[in-house]
Length: 268
Image (cartoon, rainbow, N blue to C red; front, top):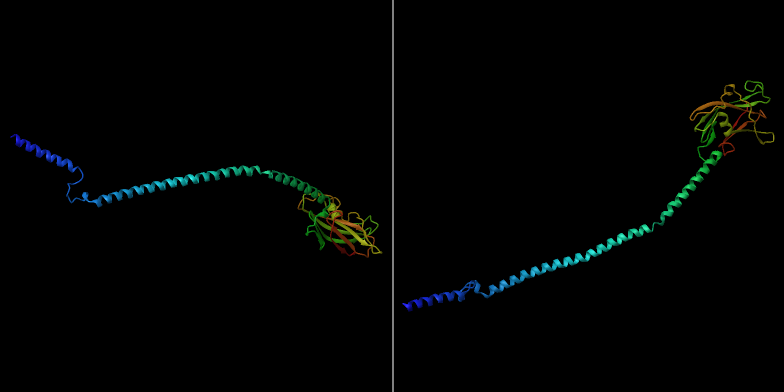
């Protein structure tokens, strides 16, 4: 009885011992399982090493990328610093403030010169060299007035228009247009532009003297101001020295101004 029990215990012990030696993973020796093949474990090792290598390469690439970013960022920062520094340098170079001041002074000088030239032009209209200034076909044109001669006539002493004269007169009827807002009347307009001359026996050109108003219609209006843009009619006369020689009218750009033309009129 006891022997059978001992045998049973031994068998149980041996069974348990064999199970412990076999282990939880490997199959029993002599088994044809793939887990007992050497090449299987070599393949496992190679796969593990490959995976490890990929991980190392990825880590190395990430590290190199971080290092490259770290190297680039200081350069950018350096450039930014350079840009920030360069701007104040440009501002510090702004010594050009003298240039506007100089330009301002030059502008003021130019304005002063222009004002002086304008004053001279007003005083002496002959300074204007506009090509539109002319006297031809019985019409004189300057910058502020136009004068057009409409009729001429010789009036003997005692005749209408020369009742009190001792010499024959050369009467001229004309129209004056005021192109500016200046205070201009027919008489001053004519005197400012025209003078009349006549040759003497020696051939010398002599200025003729202005005679009395030859047309009674204009006695009261010859000194009236002409409004800007208006045209009024008037008349003027010159005392003749000789009734056989023509009268020459000479037009200028204002009193004592540059001559813009001349025209001869027969005395008849």
